[in-house]
Amino acid sequence: MPYSPEHDEIENPLREGLRVNAAPEPCSVVVFGASGDLAHRKLIPAFYSMALVGRLPGSFGLVGVSLTSYTEEQFKKEMREAVGKHARIKPVREEIWQDFAGGMRYVAGKFDDPNTFLELKKKLEELDHSRATRGNRLFYFATPPSTFPMLLRGLKNAGLIYPPDHPSFSRVVIEKPFGHDLASARALNREVLDVLNEKQVFRIDHYLGKETVQNLMVLRFANSIWEPLWNNKYVDHVEITAGEELGIEARGKYYEEAGILRDMIQNHVLQLVTLTAMEPPVAFDADSVRDEKKKVLRAIRPILGFDEVAANVVTGQYSAGSVGGADVPGYRQEQNVAADSRTPTFVALKLQINNWRWDGVPFYVRSGKRMPKRATEIAVHFKSLPHSLFGDGATQPNVLVVRVQPEEGIALRFSAKVPGERYRPRTVSMDFRYGQAFGAASPEAYERLLLDAMRGDQTLFTRKDEVESAWRLVDPILRVLESKEYPGPFEYEAGSWGPNQSSELLARDGRAWRRL
Ligand code: BG6
Image (tube, rainbow, N blue to C red):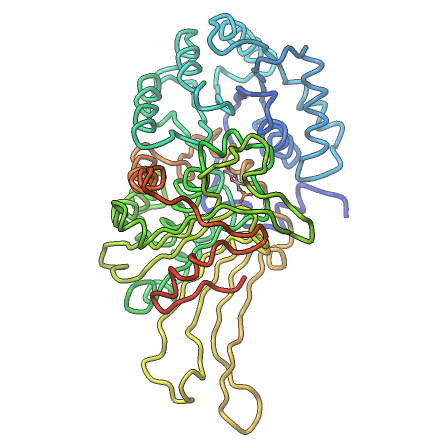
């Protein structure tokens, strides 16, 4: 069936999001790092897809900035290819592309050179005239974190940042990683807030752009049946898995510095924990939601010192194995990885949330590269029956599973009677599948987040104190893992669910990871 925006609107009500959405004002977007991977694979295709479904403002411009010395025509040509490869809806519609590309500009230059910003300013002013973008600017830092301070200074010195009460807006989207540890995150926050007001800062965590992650809030706060059960009286434990088949690809240099805790836990996985555990916010606005998420982070008991890490944290590093039928090398054989690297590519953690709702309910979380399959899910395990009428072990506790990706959906596991003259219970599942229920494919996470940033809605972006609270939890664990005394990660074969010690973490409590 040919693609039609109208069809998408009608068939997929969820794409409207959770609130009544205002259309973004006219604006120009500036992508720093325009020749990089993120711009090619995610950002430019997302803007094109938004143009296609009529989500971009009528007056829109896009300026790419990077070191690469493209001419404007070369830049457009390369972006056209990127869109052809990576856009959500293919093939590319030529008339939409032509209009979109008409508002594209390019600036080649170094980020520490004031001329780069003066040139950028000229292009933006020209777009204000030719494309009626009214002085509104969204700057996107799709660059390594070391460049963030110089980009901020460059923008400020060129007069490209308005005060927050200015009639036109200037906003900055900052990619992860936001800091390397608590101290550097704090330092970065200081630099950012020296130039911008918090209302102008959009720290991105692309997990928050995923429909299924947003749906956690709808599941919890638009239904009455879960809330009475969503606490330590009825929930036994919560299990969160974020597993990937992929290895580290060509990112050895970055990954050696980051490891799984910085790459996945400090941001994406802790976001899943907060959305699962948070109290209902007083309103559905950015600060009310973020206040509640931050309270969860503050209530998580920090894991401090060697003994607590040994008892609550298991790390692993993949060795050669086979994933999806293909042989893959071990982590230490990957490009730009040290032959004696101690960087973990897997971690399992037992977290405790010290508040009235969750006291005594462990949250087991795990994330890893080179798992047997890609699977991100949240499983809420309810308590066992106080007494079974059907014989010992005849029933399994109820489990609610939110499948974040793939096969996005929600499943509830419960007992039903096997047909026949006996009362024999068997576990069955009620399954809601996004794709089936809503027909059309969901927009990409980046589309949703870019749109929100253009609209100035910060609900799905992390606030200064939230980022720092997440680091406050991860920092002491990293200090132990990176100390000489720590023996290093356990080895696990690529294509397995991590080292055996990860199963032991739960077995010690009489529990087991779900079989995925
Ligand atoms: C990124 C990490 O933030 O998230 C990657 O840097 C990881 O290492 C990716 O692969 C996972 O995202 P997704 O959307 O594929 O689950």
